[in-house]
Image 1 (cartoon, rainbow, N blue to C red):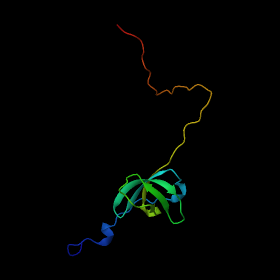
Image 2: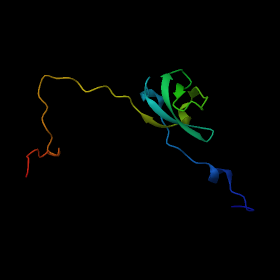
Image 3: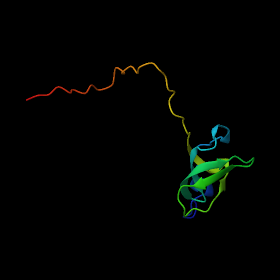
Image 4: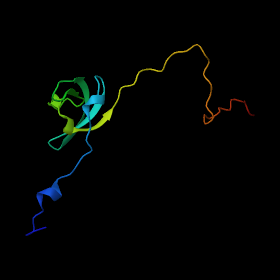
Length: 101
């Protein structure tokens, strides 16, 4: 702190870098653009960044770059359907359905 002012490097905050390779269409991302954080659905994957649709209608940004992506949630498909009966896990709670008077 020189002369009552903060050094610019001290004010700069670093965020974890996110690579766009693993982000696919339909995933949800958290974007920090110019200090405004919002969640968005990935709609396209252009060369220079991501095409997004913000979940909040008040946000007008439609694209973002890799350094603006703060978090990523991947869209997962439904579990596979099998003909085998499901086996309860060891940690699953048992429901006591006995009638007590």
